[in-house]
Image 1 (cartoon, rainbow, N blue to C red):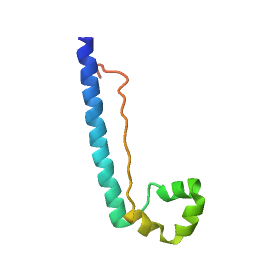
Image 2 (cartoon, rainbow, N blue to C red):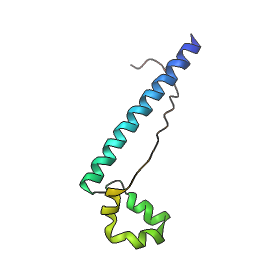
Image 3 (spheres, rainbow, N blue to C red):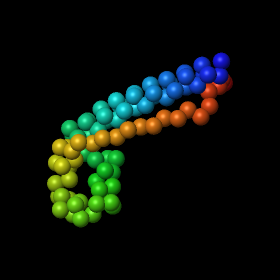
Length: 84
């Protein structure tokens, strides 16, 4: 019985990861289409790659719209049980 729970737990984690990746990809594409950056990727670039950001600062929205953004999610279910 316990092994079956672990197998189901991993299947559920994978399903949540896949759905999360699809939703994030859709969101990123929508933000790029509208050329807006409400999630602060420009701030991240400025903080960690300042010299590159300084060169592209004025055209950030255009560069963001044309960028290829990759991400992955990781889901870990800690407990499975009854919820009241």
